[in-house]
Image (cartoon, rainbow, N blue to C red; front, top):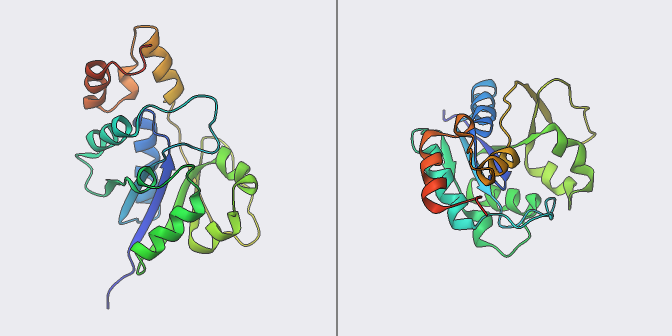
Length: 192
């Protein structure tokens, strides 16, 4: 008898992807016995309107470089190929069609779990996925009609601090997968 595949969907701008993202994915994989974590960079996040993200091509290539040695992780360009903005419920429904045999999870931080009621169609998202909520030092509150799995851990990496360090001429390489520092510098990303 075949076992059901367990796939987590991990959305975000990943601008850039960093070791904190990879640590969260690894904790989820190990803690919930996932077969796969699909990193889904969005074209434009409806929650982050303060600045346009780095080009989709660069963010996808950085994900591919970061995940190259991680067989259970996939850089999925689905949200980059559809018209913006990226709504999680539509992505989850598309993944359900793509992987009808799988048990789907949505991996997110506590900040996004708390913001979830303000997302577009959160009930439709909850009908398709179970939520894995990562937090550094607290516990997410359950929500009626939503399945919640709590992950706890700590990693200090911050994409905004990495971008800022690059603008200051001192790129934070300690928070980046090793091939990314070279890629960021060669491509001249975040330096303007």
